[in-house]
Amino acid sequence: MSLPQTWVFKVKAIDKPDDYDVQFTKHGYPHTFIPVLDHKSTSLQTLAEIFSLGPIHCNHLGLVITSQRAVETISRVLWTLNLSPEVRAAWSALPIFVVGPRTANDLRQIALFSNSNLTIADMATELCDAIEARYPNHKDQSINQSLLFLSGDKRRDVIPRRMAKASIKVHEIKAYETCPHPLLDQSLRDINPSPEDWAVYFSPSGIRYVCQSIKQLPITKLAAIGPTTAEYLEKELGLKVHVVADHPDAVHLVNSMATYDASST
Image 1: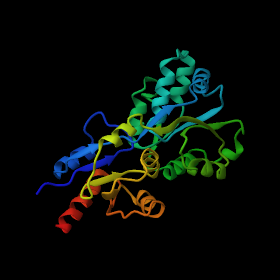
Image 2: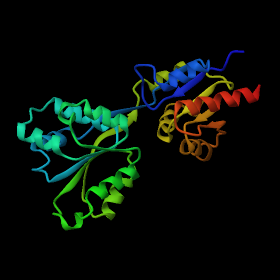
Image 3: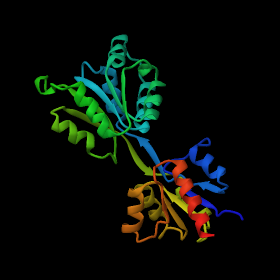
Image 4: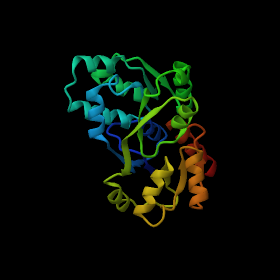
């Protein structure tokens, strides 16, 4: 028996097979990825000035990066600059706090940070613990020193709130913002899902952008990457979510879909 088509409303476009592609193929699910979100760099001129002057001149005691999108903005800014040896050395020596190993790996691909001292955590709360441990007596330091935090337009307030509580000043700059993918409207016009098909969603913001393009979501079986996305589908849109991944990764998501389909035959 052939398995239903799967429409994967991915947060971003993929240019090569990823874990989800591998798992859908492994379980025999025909699938189409529909990129929902895109990102654009912001504050380029401000960041160019900061990177040109260097962390010592700007009184930055560390750099906080929580997203690969922020790294992309840094790379774009540095491409246009010719930093002095003194400024390059200052940036290379600066403590850097990063959420996620992929973000850290992307950052190390930038020559300026290839040998930097990175503190890497899986979540923002864990990163805050590391920052507070690094600067335990910050109340006694100059109030002019701050962490440079390159955030996105949809960031949560975990880091600013924790840093304020610890009396660690944050210089936050919005380095990127989220927008609909330029091909989203066309992609939605090209699909014709049936009720037996699957639609897979990864974030409430992605769902909102889909709903802006069409009056209502396609009538399909629904799979959510996690409880936050499932709650949005159920409480905000009144839809039945058929499966929620036990853990937010490809293996658990596709396994839950396969288990549901096997039990429904």
